[in-house]
Amino acid sequence: LEMKQGGPYVAHLEVEALLAELGLPHAVLRPNLFMDEVTMGGFLGVAGPLREADECSHPFALSPISMIDVRDVADCAAVLLDGAQTGRGTGGEWFDLTGPDAIALGGELADCISELRPRPVSITACDADAFVAQRGLPPA
Image (cartoon, rainbow, N blue to C red):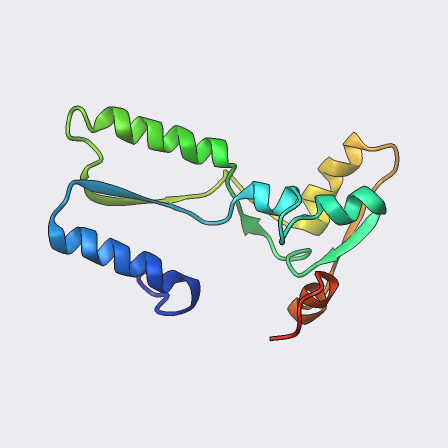
């Protein structure tokens, strides 16, 4: 995050800076992207469109992305909270959290979903404006 000085990271960077300035014992978990956001029904999710059809489009279809399940983030937080009893994980460390591999939605994810359904699914690439329009929002 140090190199990202704008966009959605501003609030996170301000909180991290304040924690460091105050000298409070803390650790920062930095999950890259929640897998649940992409696989379930949220704004970035493919579950909704694939519930109605065997194909959908997504701006991340061809871009391998490192994601993490929210339960794995919770497990990391539990380890840190347990370590807080001994002082480990409270010295202002930050932890970038991702899954073991970056996956492409149109590749590995579509293949996994296809194994669970009676017919294969396809996730094709689209640009961000088309994706936002599909979600019923005005262009940026």
